[in-house]
Image (cartoon, rainbow, N blue to C red; front, side, top):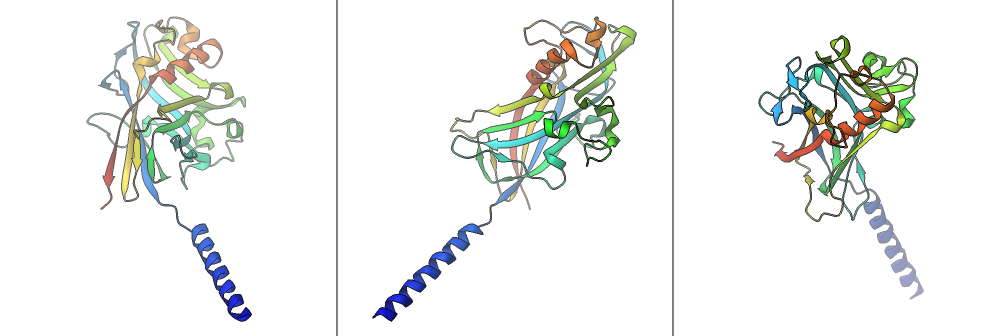
Length: 271
């Protein structure tokens, strides 16, 4: 009888171990996500070198527009936050460079697409940063992997203050010497963006295993020239037209944050 009990006990122990092994090696399903930013001017398409008018009535044209994205993550109230997974985006950093855009999201509109994997599921909150986390902001750009490498020299201050998080360059007849150069950077000026509501029971996005989930958001250039207090941004001050730091960089940080808007999401089945 003792032998039977010992054998039975061993079998139960083996079954338990097998179940634990199965659980620990259970695969987590993931889906492909395309995070797509569309620059616009109000509700109209944005084009490089086209003439636009700020809410203050000042004409301007843009010939360079770039910014870093980092720390993309999805969540909802009943789970831990899940980060974007990419084998090609070093440190989870992406460079949205609209001078290198290769396609349209909608007719006539430029776009930047960041591709990554995300654990499948329904999510009510999406967050990311415009900028680079402090830990990676002061590394050697000659040794850094893409997109933080020296090849993107217009996005790094040579006096070792770190990377430029957001860069807009162009011209305006209202600016001194007609030059617009707005460069926002510095650890304190990282820009956290969030779409949705963590506690909303209705999901903002559903990531599926056999589909590409596209998430569209826009950067409204005209909103960049409306200050957080409702006043209108003007290029007439030299420090407002050529921005590297200080008061106008702080103001522009807030303006950029309010210019980013969620558009829509869609799931495209993979054939």
